[in-house]
Length: 179
Length: 325
Image 1 (cartoon, rainbow over the protein chains, first blue to last red):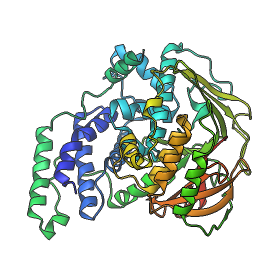
Image 2: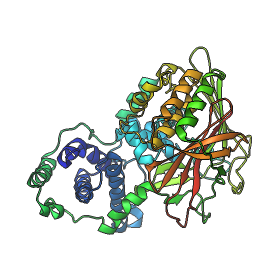
Image 3: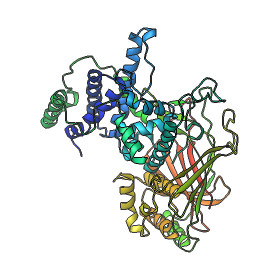
Image 4: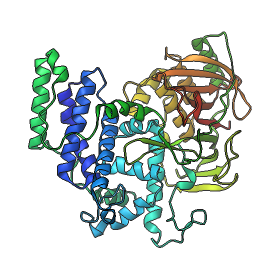
């Protein structure tokens, strides 16, 4: 059985990166990481299994809590949209097209790209988080890559979808499916 | 373009923190406390916590206890006006007296005598697609049943066409694409296709366990895990009869696999359903259905059997695939 210390050592930077990526604050990310491992410790002491999927979902829950805390403190005019991509202060114009393209993907495809390429979860770990088989993760990732490539090639100022007036074209929304 | 896309995607990461980064000073201090506590192995260690620097934790104990439930169960649906998500009817099962081992051997032999691989994979499928909401909960969205055809060209490219199928009995059709609507029609180059033929399963049943462990990245596959991986393999690989027979032979080695019964699948075919309940006991059951005539694997399903919730009936089919063979 893996020791908690080994689990901590192996996964701290994963947790820190997941939080930092979404909170745009190293300090807040460190707080989230500390909370996440404290919860993992309590779970471990209670006989729970140490697993990356459990830890990952815990971090995402804590990030969600931080979003709500920030929302309560910010004035309406300063409210930052709850998007996976962080605020523009960190954005590099060089990659704004990638971020825009990601934003236009349907959530399952955007998510699989981010957890794979940015959060750096393995297929097996992503499968555990999403409740999918590893084959389904691979298949979804393959389709997501194809959709991202299409989104990068598409002009940004597309006409709104006829089914959803005044909404941006969401790529992949028509065929949410499994592997 | 594949390598360029990968590179650009990685470089567009808004965070500079990488999974393999060394631990910070703060992290090392926190780690020291956990190491000391583990080393002590004292009963008091159950309540010991690292000295928390900074804000108080933002998650309550009650919220923490609910996390595992959030991981496993439905939370939000994209169609919030539906009080309960509509799901396909359960398949009717008739008990079979023969045990799983004997049946699977009969089916394996039948498969070896059956037709070899076709040139395409055609299937009808449906599931609740999963994604992670911003608060970390798992979101499920209802989709319509889909018909798909995967065609393998001699140059290694693969064409995947998906078409909306008819809603299943009882499913609200409003908001879903009309049956026959082409949802996707993509051709993947041999470099893009994630399932090259050479990575397919072995023809020796004794080697399948190791293959699935490596293929899935999971050295501790449950029987339910194995059924789901096999379902994915059948959806993405043109299997020879030897390969498919090997998979069926491997199933005989799974003590947790039982015979659920004889059934008529969603395409009207008679099949023998095998069941696994060990992937997430009390929450999900996985089925694999094999034709008693040709020994071919014809369908797979996952059933939610957890606690009844406001949004979800129980038991409820949450995914199925039926291969036209």
